[in-house]
Length: 506
Image 1: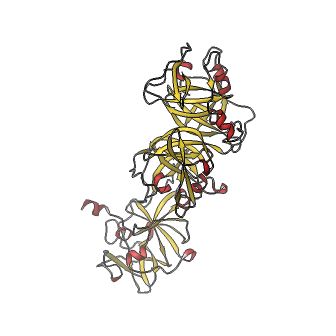
Image 2: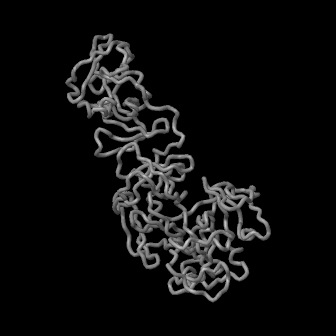
Image 3: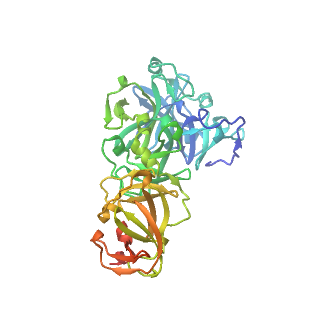
């Protein structure tokens, strides 16, 4: 917790995660993270180049701001808390409401929203004269983020704090009675407003697990128009997707590097451990938006998903309010979410230092070979390169238009590309589903998997370097002759679309 040395003590009566977890906006000022109940945040607006004067004298009063015709006083939270003043450029003003009155808080930025159960909160103890003595309701720990939960009623009750009537209070009452502390109010919902590829989007807060600031985006194991990489979050490598591609309005065209993101649940309630990160440019706002289609400017549907995203007016700007239920149920996200793995990963590395095949260095002429069939064609692999033999009906993320890759599946907590070996070799795999056999191999420092019809035997016989066989004209080959006097073609890295060190040197 920045700039405080107050110890964090457990709060009595902690509740479990779930319904007890409340939604908070995460705000930044002078290096400190502040959490404020989302229900108390009316909206977030950019700090104007110049604030208006306001007829109150306070050391922390920065001025005033005009929002839809109403003049709202603005307090510099950095100064109020005895920290550095909020920055003058790219700052924000958070409009806070309490008992039908509002004030503005000048801050450095907004990190997004977080769901904090009582188990994430701890009591803080400050000296009586410390600025946070009355304002800090608790300390919190959310992932790697530590900060202070602001007590909004205590803030509103501070002597001399300027508050003005909430000009939007009547409009909210017309939409239904507010549910204090909840995420929804009548036909409106608390939403996170953000930008992705320059487009203004919003998503219901109840669908969001976490918001991530600019983080390292690592490349996925395969090229995919939707799956752009992975982001580290809460000890997991979470698949990150192209948000615009997902909702059918374009593409981010983002290469691996850094990106902010919104982490969401995918699937039904029974599958809530599956998560995906939606890549975004930045968080703009937290505010209530209409839930009914009648309040929208229009709708955008995505073919094949059942989604209808509502176009709503936010401060005179069209914002696409995403259909959270349809996004969570999108089968494309379900397939990508299955690639979520622990950051630690497996200590096992795929076949580094495997002997190169078809006459490569380091291969013994009497190695053990695993023989298998694809249709009527016979093939062999060095047994030392075989990492696993599995049923053929493994859950797989299909890939279209990337021959010879046909999909990706999760093996030992690592996304493993599946190659259409039969098509690449010009033959046919006749078995399907559980009748087929998934073979995982490690070659040239990489891992690949393929489907086979049948595993035949393990042979310990010499390798015979030959020219290409008729079944794979484009590939160099070697063979073995087994005990039954049958010839089996030995497959090397080229069969699996892998480059050897000799190929790279050439």
